[in-house]
Length: 287
Image (cartoon, rainbow, N blue to C red; front, side, top):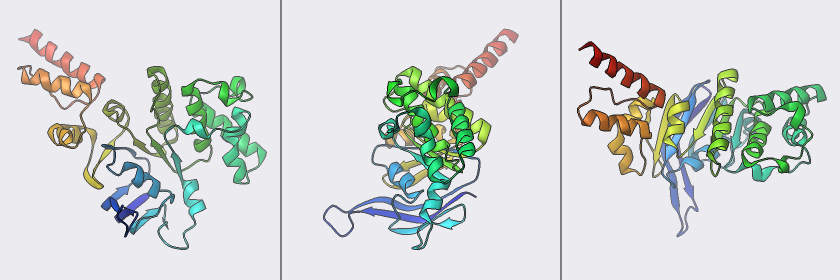
C-alpha cells in the first residue's frame, strides 16, 4: 500500500461564520501501481483531498500515511513526502518560468542535489514520457510552445522528480481536442512504461473510462463510490443525482438495449462498444 487515508476530516475556516466541512470521514487505501480516477461535482472535495495527499494542507483530524510516512504528525518530513507525491495543478503551464525547456524541467532535480549526469537523464526521460523531442526542443523557450506543449513541459517537470505517486488535477482543462489527446496519450504512456501510481482528477467520464482501473466518487465531502469503472458506471441514476454522468458510449448502449437490442450495456469505452455490437451482428447472421 502506497497511500492509507484513515478517518480524514477537513474543515475550512473552523470556528468562524464561514466554517465549511470539505472532507467527512474519508477512508481510502491505494496500492502501488493503481491508476485511480477521482470524480465529483464542483465543490465535492476532490481538490481538498488531493492537496492533503502531499501535505499542502493537513487534515483537521485523521491520518494520511504515504509510503510509510504519517504526514499528519508534527515531525513529518514533508519535503520527503512531496518528493514521493507529485502534484500537477490545473493550468500548470502558468508555473513555467525558466528561459529554456531544459532548465524548467531540470529545476526540481537540481534542487534535489543530483549530479548533472543524473539531471540530464531525468530531463531526457521526462520529455520522452510526455512525447516531447529532447534534441529539437531542449533549448527552446517554453513560452514559444502551444498550450498543450507548455502543459506537457510542466508535467515533465514533475515527472523528472521521479515521484512514486503522480496526481493530476484536471490536466486537460482548457485545451483543444488535439492538446487533450497529447496530454492523455502521455499520461497513458507514462503509466504503461513506469507503472507509477496515478490519481487523475477529471470531469470527463470518457477520459476516466479510457484510462483508469478504479474510480473514487466524491459528493459533498464524502466518498460515495469506490469500484472498478464498469461497476461505477452501472449506477447511472445515482451518478446523475449528484451531478455526474456516464461516458456517452455507455449511455448509447443503454439506449440500444432499451430499444430491444440484445447487447450488454455495461461497456465504458468505444472499443468495448464496437466489440459488443459486432457480437450482436454475428449472432443475427447465425439466426
